[in-house]
Length: 529
Image (cartoon, rainbow, N blue to C red):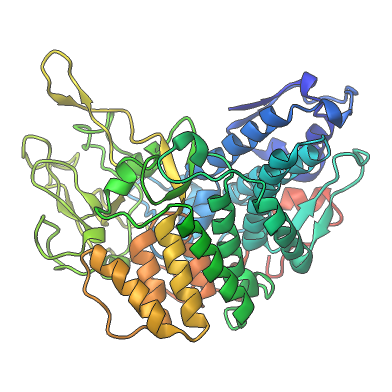
């Protein structure tokens, strides 16, 4: 949890939260802001501890992504791979999850507000650090974090508030439009800035939690892959420039030169994300990967997770069908591709958790009502009509059981690995393949995608289309933060899917929270809200 004390000279930050972000509207947050009063505090930015604030930046970014109620929800639950149905009285939560899935959110949505606050807080702190005399590496790290936050704000809301920490506290933040925000990202991720970042290859969790050449190159590749969309309001009809796609290709090649590579044994990547050959940038927090595990497991998965799961998140039958394998079983050796996963008869499965569930002793689990705990791909007609066992569940990060020191037997643990992967090499690999395809080199792109598919025990493709690429990204990267952005880039985000009709074009961005619009006259609400 991040604490801002009076001795950190944060008067401007406090005023920023109060007057432009309406932080008091939080119902729950990982940020503790102390002593919010009007007392005048020394504003000498040269006294800011740069190292301490950089650490806070990294921690705050992790906190914004780990919790399902924050930015993760906007990036994944609004897409087609993850569904949070209402199960009786469970997971109703005022309709917040249904709003995301069905694209009916409003400017008063608390999760949209929380995410807006979290990300805008980061840009303010980066601006403050840049005015406080950082050295060359600290400046490059700070600009990396500013580019990352700016990229996500622009992607999610289409405009970016920008406040000069040295300006009078009564002065409202200016608003960067799409062109201005794009220019800032390009400046912050320039070659001269990236050259001042350390090289950090795979396998070192301490280096992978902070900015490195590889993570900055990944972010720049991700940005240029989406630049034509960012500049055109999410319009998938916009054409990517060849030079931008070539930049994606060269940046991915530079990441490869840093020592990263695709790792076989797909699920081992998530067992040890800090030492995987694919992990480029990882995030951590108090709950590590626990949210991704608990929110999908059933209450009676308490043989592996202390207290059991929360029995919420699932996937749709259409997304489950994207993967090779028989529809009626996920037993090991049934012919499914590796990424779809499996369900053994003496443990929790991995990937797409389908069918009958078992404990370590091979005993079939039951629902709380005594029926077989059999996760189905079939769904009821309404999103509010779900029972305890409907919906295939998604598990990438494994719950880690504890070993009883006296008996040597496995006992329920309290969560999974302490890290989550935010930037992964297979994503970079697929970004390069897409850039090649967009630049007309589809044959080389097909070779790359088939190399990945063969490693994942999937049948090679004979041809390559846009649909093949977006589907392949879904199979490889499900619940890894990027599905919404990918669907927008390929023109699929507004299309209907299970429980969601065709969406209005306004849903390509989120509304500016009503509290932010009402406190900053420079902010205009996005059309349609």
